[in-house]
Amino acid sequence: MIRFYNGKVLRFAPAMRVTEDEVWTDGGRICHVGPAPESLPAFERQIDLNGDLLIPGFKNAHTHTAMTFLRSCADDMPLSDWLYKQVFPHEAKLTPEMLYDFTSLGILEYLSSGVTASFDMYFHNDAYAAANIDCGFRTVICSALNNFDRDVENIEREYLKFNALHELVSYRLGIHAEYTTSMERMQYMVSLAHKYREPCFAHLCETKAEVDGCVERYGMTPPQLLDSIGFFDYGGGGFHCVWMSEDDVALFARKKLWAVTNPCSNLKLASGIAPLDELRAAGVPMAIGTDGAASNNALDFFREMYLASVLQKVRRFDAAAGGADAALEMACVGGARAMGLEDCDDIAPGKRADLVVVDLRRPNMQPLHNVPRNLVYAGSKENVRLTMVNGRVLYENGEFFVGVDPAALYARVNAHVREMFG
Image (tube, rainbow, N blue to C red; front, side, top):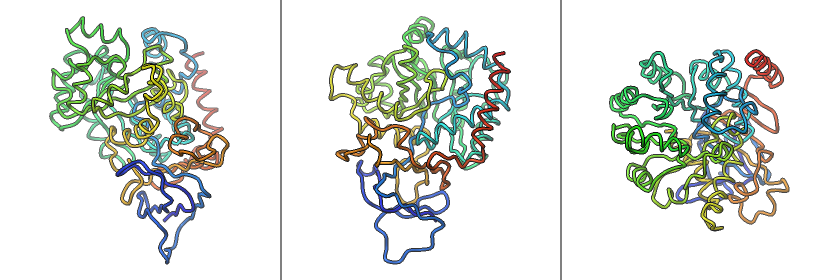
């Protein structure tokens, strides 16, 4: 058992609040939240928070972790050129061994940013899952079915394999996007969703050109098209959701589909600003993701929360838009639920011990007028003191405890890059 005491705790149910409870973990779960009893059990470790804040970790609800290999390589290009001239050609050179190392690098960055789980869409999933398991990190794999897949039926095999592989790994159904996936393959994904009664996800309404192209091909927007073939019959959602019509928003609200915003990536690729306030007002559930390091270029959740909030203000010319509390809830709670990790969405007995200690004794966190809003508007990665996943401390005070030597990993990833790019 591990004891966190003498600090503050951010809790979300029944409402967001900061308490001064103790939190104990036993194995991979939280076993106590509240005052200390008169008699304490024996603890493996006792962590004095010294006034710092314990939060349920951030959930990166859309990413391509291994794309760290394209960080600051494919920059300052529109999405179509970025994807077809830089990303796809270099991805073709990736080996499973390379992807394992690039994924491990991304995991280190997640941990130092207070992220405790990722919703990842990529390939070489055996190597990807192995990297997460070896590091002790929690991930949900989303299938990325598209026209480049040689073995379409591998999606079903992966669904069955990865949902039974390890407690840190699960798998959800999805296509890469409408514009990279034939109707025949989209219908195959629908057949799997119906067979297993599972939600489905996709890159959706990321750019105006994507939406216009879908309307030209099918006479419908991407959300309307996917819904018309039964893609969303068991829920799911979309990544990006920038160019959403009123009908698209109503569809998401009616079916309770998840809209996962990626503000940094959408800005860098000049895709636009997602209408988060309109989605929220309609009752659409929402989460936040970084997208990959090729289009971001950082995997920094503090920056994502900040932009998710302030971009709504400038989009609507209203300083009251895009509330910080909503952004924080999207980052901690919404992401967990979008990924199917309902036992990772709060700090409460029985929940998973996926926890982050935020240092409140740094200048940017003082004074303590409103701690949750400080996280969104003033917080940064430098405030992450400790990250725990499934009851294991994986990052603390600048050191990683994932079985990987960072210096050796950096040497390997740079060697891989030299091999790939010449």
